[in-house]
Image (cartoon, rainbow, N blue to C red; front, side, top):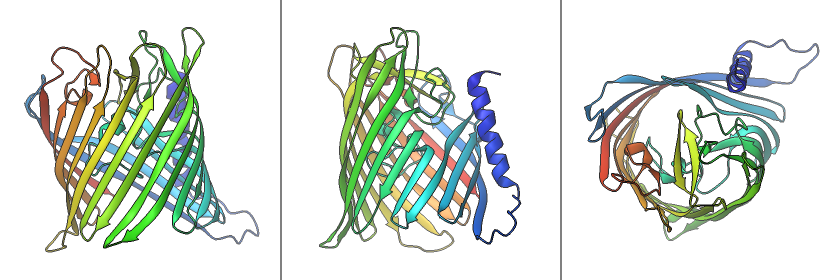
Length: 368
């Protein structure tokens, strides 16, 4: 069995182990709370580009299993996903809680960078997701301190979740090892700070993030410095919310490109870029059958400079609908020079990548 397949089998085994009742030690009176859940999601898409242009089928998009629990100061969370053509870990970590405001989490854990938990509202996330700086999960440890009106995150990572740049069957977007660009993520340190805002009818938070690490060249054995920074704010006034973020990343490699991968495929991105995000959302007053409706417009762009590079844009307009265990996204996704809508990558100049492409996407999820 290939090493990546072994890794997935081990994680799946751990998940199954957490689902089964565990015997208690004699005389152990500590209370514990174990929870098991999951989801099944179905997806429909209408595309105005590519070989599948036009109506798509309403297909099963995802099955997933979740397990979490706590006993005393220890707590954990696991999630494993099965897609149509591959399966992958989402996260798997064990935590130690000092108190409600401070804890340490170790394993495959969310990277504390930028707006948390997401710099987006829709099913397709924002540009940062496809660049590995939004909703990214890697192997490491994160210390959180959220006392008073401030939140600190300090994190150290050993690499991507599989520590294997040649493993393309993954959920998080990480550096890919390809023949043309044989790099791999290595160690990285993160620092994130945010402070609550409250005044003049607005509330929310504002802060900054930074990281520094190294990238390995698997062909030469050399290293390059990988770093990034961001300033971000999320503001809420009544039923309106606004997300703003500027981020910069630099892989420091020779040349203008590096490869990332996720969902089975590697693709190229600009090795250095500014990523700007501006998202506006409105939560409709609750009426009728539905529990909640939120409508939004998420705009993000990847700004680049150099030969063979070109700016990328993404705009997602849509609404989410919640009713009991059901959660549905209806999104119109438009992209210019964006990988997931037929573009050559992100920030890459190639023939045919500069026109706008779009798709209507409906995702219905059942969560339990």
